Image 1 (cartoon, one colour):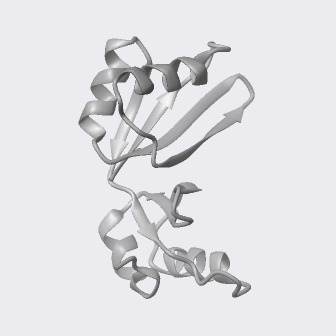
Image 2 (image 1 turned 45 degrees about the vertical axis):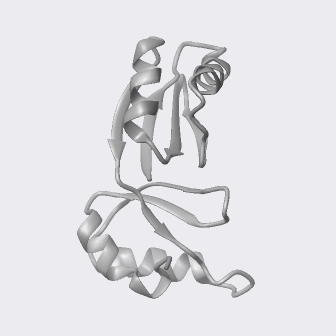
Length: 128
């Protein structure tokens, strides 16, 4: 899996265009979200084939920012405090969470500033 960050700022139809482009290219979204801060609109989406998704977006002049390997974890649903526990494990390992969202399988998707340290610190929640 790959997380791709898109800059949709300045385009009211940015998400529509991105969805249409991926649809025409037969590239499914596996999870993600759109986040805004003032005039800045950033989208993070998960794809099985990151290179194909990147190429399709670039060909359609959709601004791609980064493609990263996401940390995929499963929280113990129904157990209070799980998000806090995994976030604390990452913080204690001196790892910063840059982006967090869920995929279509209710798994936690994390983009961190140090994948290897994040992977080690969160083995308790690893997806098998």
